[in-house]
Image (cartoon, rainbow, N blue to C red; front, side):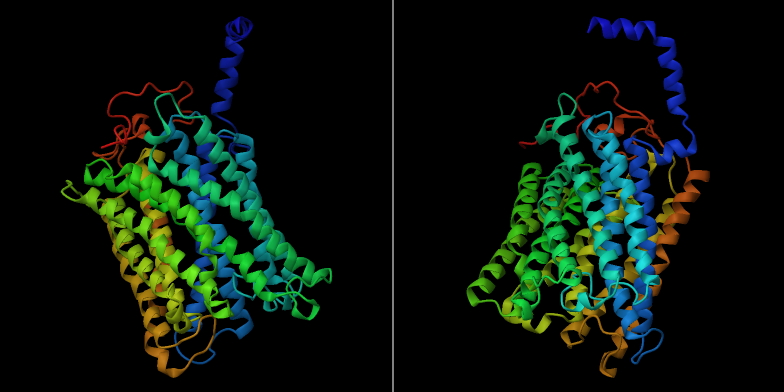
Amino acid sequence: MATVRSDIDVGHEAHHDAHEHDHHPTFFRRWFMSTNHKDIGTLYLLFSFIMAIVGAAFSVVIRAELAVPGLQFVDPLFFNQMTAMHALVMIFGAIMPAFVGLANWMIPLQIGAPDMALPRMNNWSFWILPFAFTVLLATLFMPGGAPAGGWTMYPPLSLQGGSNVAFAIFAIHMMGISSIMGAINIIATVLNMRAPGVDLLKMPIFCWTWLITAFLILGVMPVLAGAVTMLLTDKFFATTFFSAAGGGDPVMYQHIFWFFGHPEVYIMILPSFGLMSEIVPTFSRKPLFGYRAMVYATASIAFLSFIVWAHHMFTVGMPLGGELFFMYATMLISVPTGVKIFNWVSTMWKGSISFESPMLWSIAFIILFAIGGFSGLMVAVVPADFQYHDTYFVVAHFHYVLVTGALFSIIAAIYYWWPKWTGRMYNETWAKVHFWWSLIFVNLLFFPQHFLGLAGMPRRIPDYNVAFSDWNLVSSIGAFGMFVTPFMMAFILLHSLRRGEKASARVWEGARGLEWTVPSPAPHHTFARPPVIRPGDLAHEDTLH
């Protein structure tokens, strides 16, 4: 150790110069070769923003076609390509990378770590994504076009494509590898790099939800890789895993896919729960109610998510015992979810609430996510699901969970931490315009789809009976209104960079946690030495009460 110290003393000048150089790397070195968690977090967030716009553009094509009955703009095959691509881009390109970006930015700041545990792998896990999505989006320009079998890629339909099958599967493999590396990195960081005094049961809930989510990713991404590889061999190497003619079973694919697919939807919502548990206490000016219950609820949801997969398959002809098991297991998962909603509402109860834009997005999340949760319980009832299955009711259900759930929480988090990231405050009035605009149009977009589904309108079709025309028009108007919102948000945030007021270290009056002890903007390197934790620094110091 003495040798190391003397080396440092001797080469102090040189080290200092190198350090200075390190602080001002060239544009290329900083953004393409960075191992800094903040830069990589920024790259993830920028990438997810671009993909969200691409995915939203696909959905606008869908909704333009469905605005009035009859075939208007695109042929049915291209319509099906849009539905499949919209989902793949939104799930793997917008929602998941946004959460990983927030994790990269915030977890080291929240636990007092200097960086992520595996910084080089962190860089790699990001740079796989642009290549993966270039491959996926390139299928649109290939003979036969993009994947058209829905995001679930059920055989035999998905195997009727041409070369797109191989390219889409290669892209999915790359996305999976990226997710697995991101998950390993988060687990290693949270378990090994917490500052002294940041016990596991004192960390922010966001770190907890991401730790649990990372285990979910490790559990299910290899399963997806197996399922799509079997599709690949069925298509190109004459295997018959899913072909009844050769002794295979297409329903087996559904089981394998949904064993991945259901935990996947929880991968997209658990970090949201963490974000809510950060934002709601801040603007309620109260500690989070029931901290430990929140941790146990998150872990319960994660466990249960593995044993409910076949509720996506009630209509395939499972034995009654199987259907009952999956129905009851699905009902059970609503209990820990209900605990969470109860705890957020209890946190707000008798709090000194102020309605800044992150709080508005959070309250909207709680209410609208609950609507998505209740419609989920409706489709979980087996005999009822026979009516709901493959109708627009299901589309309404999962968009309430994923748009007004996952997406709203991401927007809330960006508004919440933006001053910390940039050192500038955004224009609160315009942020509220953005919120109310989004709230109105998102409900115009998805609420009518409940009525369409209950009336019997099937999903994934380019044309429909004239009886469904009124609500479809309302839904499409909602979609066109929603398409404006990402550009509105980009304008608000870019304007703040130029003209925004300077932000203090503790941006929000009620904010607690280590990230609020560093200056705004957060320096390029934080916590090179572990922080000394003072009373009041941690949001969850006394978690027993």
